[in-house]
Amino acid sequence: MSPTTPHATPHATKAPYGDFDASIPSYEASGGDWADIAAEATQLGEERIVVNMGPQHPSTHGVLRLMLEIDGETVTEARCGVGYLHTGIEKNMEFRTWTQGVTFCTRMDYLAPLFQETAYCLAVEKLLGITDDVPERASIIRVLMMELNRIASHLVCLGTGGNEMGATTVMTISFTAREEILRIFEAVTGLRMNHAYVRPGGVVQDVPPDVVAQIRKADPLIRGYLGQLGDLMLANPIFKSRLVGVGHLNLSGCMALAITGPVLRSTGLPYDVRKAAPYCGYETYDFDVPTSDDADCYSRVVLRLEECYQSLRIVEQCLERLEATAGQPVMVGDKKIAWPAQLAIGSDGMGNSLDHIREIMGTSMEALIHHFKLVTEGFRVPVGQVFQSVEHPRGELGVHLVSDGGTRPYRAHFRDPSFNNLQAVAVMCEGGQVADVVVAVASLDPVLGGVDR
Image 1 (cartoon, rainbow, N blue to C red):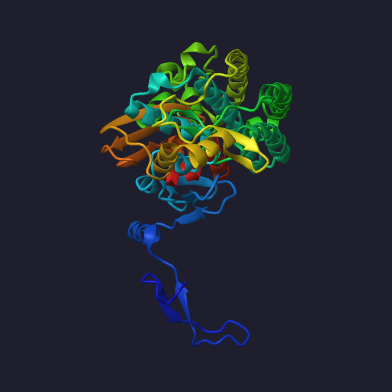
Image 2 (cartoon, helix red, strand yellow; image 1 turned 180 degrees about the vertical axis):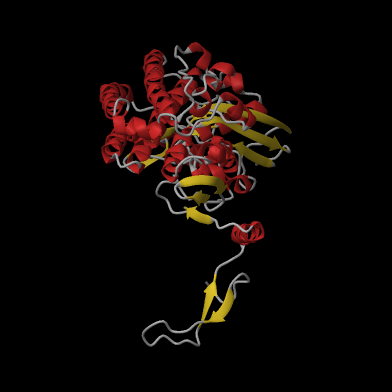
């Protein structure tokens, strides 16, 4: 610790061994929560052991700091410390155009980027008043990509959770299955993550001609991997002994803490935004919302596996609709909003179509000016504010946008489900064992990029 740090108290120490220079001061770290904890323990005349779990990555699903007060192996108090991954994404969005905002929010929860993109674009479309103008094919593609992303996200949750308990095979199978989905994402968007594929008014470009066949080829492979995961975990006596009855959180606790997603549904409440407040045409898809009454870590594993199968049901329906809408537009017709221009894949990768470049550079000064203004300045959004939510893999993701009539958001704020769900750490962990903390946090599936954003 630097000598300039205000909480570092220098004191000379004697050299315990070797030729250590005793005149060099050493420093004792204090400040933050530690001073309060120590003072309280002294006042009560108690001896406490307070340990840090995190903010290193293993077992805390990112840079999450857990402060655990323990009595032997029993956790008597558990608190979360967040903010180690703060990126200022919401503030940065105030200084970018409405379209550029997609490239920021996609990086929040990096395991489920397409949900942030879609929620944000749905909110922008509400402000613009073009919700009903978004082409049907664009909405189908959004649903397809989100449901594939839901499976990929759940696979990371199951895989990393298994690895933390020593079941490395669970992780390797989960990540092998996820790889099939990431290949599809790369084929459609050009990227495996941080796609910026969903845009206000639709999507960047149509899916490749062979993507339907690619997804249908991957479907049985993914189902096979899910079956292997079920066989490895659900009847495994060691796995069950670690999860059954651990991290219990009942319905009243979830309601009091505003917890959503699989954790809420494990208490028996079938709340799912796709059913409660449909968007992107979800009301026209046939799927179920799995629930459980056990309200423990094991039931959340079962639910996430079942949700993967339900997402595959939706994906198959999307593929049928894609085949039925082939050739239809994927972006609103209003050229004052539709950005970028129609894309084409050429020898140089992805870029503006050659016809569009030929027009704006050779035949139409007006088209060139419009393209320049639209890309650099952006479109204006009417004054107002809006809230839009979607069913994220971790729960309800909300977006609150405020427009002052300009070309960029006056305010953008996200209700990230991981942030709310982390409130449950104390009630789920206190009274349990230290080893149960790892299991309980894994069952919440927090992603710290979304928590700190």
